[in-house]
Image 1 (cartoon, rainbow, N blue to C red):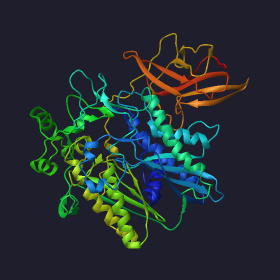
Image 2 (image 1 turned 135 degrees about the vertical axis):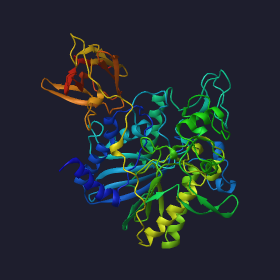
Image 3 (image 1 turned 45 degrees about the vertical axis):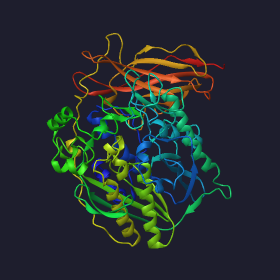
Image 4 (image 1 turned 30 degrees about the horizontal axis):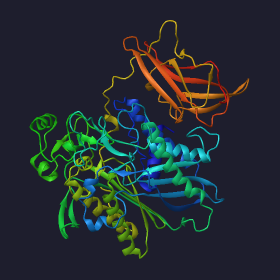
Length: 601
C-alpha cells in the first residue's frame, strides 16, 4: 500500500470519526525549516496513528483530578482583571490549577497510558534557546514514562504518558514572575516594558537557568500525574471509571463569515456578533514576558504608528471594514488578506467534540485564556446538563486539529496585550466559539447530524521553504564523515558532562523518524553494548554546526551530562547521519568514540 493510500485510510477511519490531533505544545523549534522538516510531522503523525491502530485492545478508562499549585502563573494579570468581578469571585486563582487525567488500562488492569491536561505554556525554555526541545511538558512525559517503561530509552516503551494543552493562553510556567533583566526591578504591569538601561522584561522560572526551570516545572507536573497513578488502587482516591457510549461531532466553520448573537455578561444584554478577517495587532510583535519581541513594540498598544502602518500596507493593507471589525486592536498584519503563497492564517477552522460516557472532550483550535476556557467549559457543561439532566466533566483540549492563535474574552480583548492582539477573528472570537460549541453539544446529545461545513483549502502541494536545501556536504581531506574530532576524556564522575565532536553531514539529509542521531552505550561484555541514552534523552544534547559554507564542512557536537542514576562502567558515544555527495546521492555514515569510564565518586 502506498504512503498516500495509507494516509487516506487512517484519515477516513480516525479524523472523520474519533480522532483529535492534540498538541502537547513545543515553542522551542527553530524557524527556517526546509521542506523535509515541514513534511516530517505528518509522517510521524501517520505512523503514530498506524501504530495505535495495530495495537488496539479492549480496556477501561478512569478519570481523576489533582491540584498542582506551584507550576503556573498568569502572565497577563491586568487583562484577567478586566473580567467581571462577580465572575472572578467564583475562582480562587487567576489560572486553572487542576490537572485532569484520563487513565487507560486493559481488562487485566495493566496500565497502557495516560493523558494529562494542565494549563501551562511550554515556555520554560525562553526564546534565547537554540535547541529543539519539548520543554517542561516533554520533560514531564519523560519522567512519567520512565516510571513505567523501565530500562527503555525514550519513545520505545509501551506506556504513553502525554501532557496535553488546556486553556493555557495567558498561563506561564515562569512562576518567579517578570523582572527587568539588568536591574532586577519589576516590569510595568500594563506594557511589560522596562525603563531605559534596565534591560528587557523577562519572566523566570524557579531554577538557576531555563534548563533547570524546565526540569523543576516538568517534575512538578509529573509528580502530580504520578500521584494519581500511585493512588489508583486505593479506595476513595477520587478517581472513577468512565462508562457509557462514545459519540462525536465535527464541523468546519468559516469564522470571518460567522454572524450570530451572544449574551454580553458585562452589560447583561444580547449582542449581535460577527467574525473578522484574520489580523494580528501591534502587541503581537511585543511578545510576552516568556519571550519579548523585537523593536520597540509594547503590550497594551491601542494606537497606530504611521511608519508601521506603511510597512503593513506595503505587505497587504487591511480594509476599512477590517479596521472597524478589529477595534480597538490596531492592525499590524492583515493576515486574512495575505494569500501569497497561501493563506497566512486560516479562515476555516475545525470544531470538534468527543463524548466518552459523561466526559466531554472539547477540541478547540487555539490557545484559550484562563477565563475564556472557563466560560466555554461552563457553557458546554450547562448545555449538557439541560439536555440530559446529568453533570458532565468537560475537558478543554487546546491546540487541536488546526492552529488559530489565541482566544481571549471580549473584556480581555480591550486591553490588547499579546494574547488579545493575537486573537485573530476580532473581539467576538470567544462568543462565536461558544455559540459554535453550544450548537454542536446540543446536536451531539440529541443525536443530530450537522453539516460538515466548508472544507479548508488544500495546501500540501504548495508548501514553500525559504531555505535552499542541502546543496552538498564536504569533509576535510584527512577526516571522513563520522571521524571523531574531539574524543572524550578517559574518566568521568557523576554530574560531569562528556563533550565529543564528529565530522558530520547536514541532519536535514535524513530526519531519522523513530531513530536517533546519537547513542550513549554502556559495555555489558566484549560482544554486547546496551543503549542507555539517545537524542530524545534529557541528559543529551545534539548540536550541529556549519564550519565552512563554501566547502560544506560541518560538525556534530554531542554533550552528555552524567545523571545521578548512571551505573559505573565503560561507555562510548556513537553518531549516525547522512551526507549529500556533491555529484548526487545521499549516503549514510556513522562514527564512535573511544571507550571511557564512569567511576564512583
